[in-house]
Image (cartoon, rainbow, N blue to C red; front, side):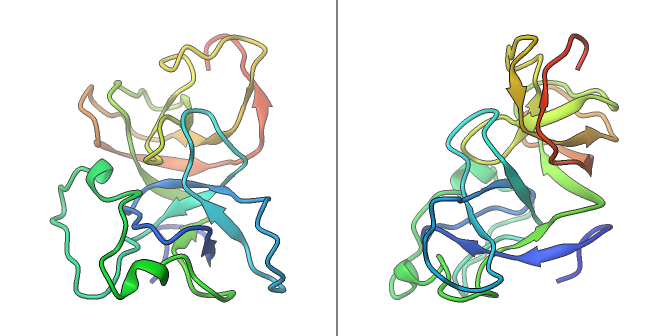
Amino acid sequence: MPGLDGHTRTCRLNASKRVAKFSALVIDATDTTTISGAIFVKLPSGANVGPVAGVTIGHWLEPNVFYAEDTDPSTITGTTPSPPYASMLGGTGIDIGPTLQISGQARCYSASSAITAGKVLVIADAYGRVDTAAHLSIGAGTLIYPVGIARTNSSDAANDVVLVDLNFMPTYMTTGM
């Protein structure tokens, strides 16, 4: 599946869970499985976790499962697949897992706050939605793990889609971010 704009990479998910499209995932540095060239990822555990691995470009689901376009991602991400796929979605090889946008621009689901274009976005929750560090009350001097810079605005509604210029470089929170 092609990415929106930039490079994509198929990764190996550390657990057999469904993942909604437009969800930010983090690098799983604890996976000790030896598969040359594999990138191991996991669902975020909460707000401002990292390092960020990328943003899913499509739903990661078992075959014959469908979710409507406007389905709340919190009803998909982290749920367990039905049998016999309950142990398969985690992936067992280099190229078996969700495809992530890793450079360029990506679409992300926003959390429940309005986002203004130009603001730095971080992971807001365990579903991989994004928000600004200020909305999450992350103080100056705190290490943040950005997903990128918002290029479009979003309303106060949860699950609005915002276009993001990806930049995963950890940095320290400053005033106005």
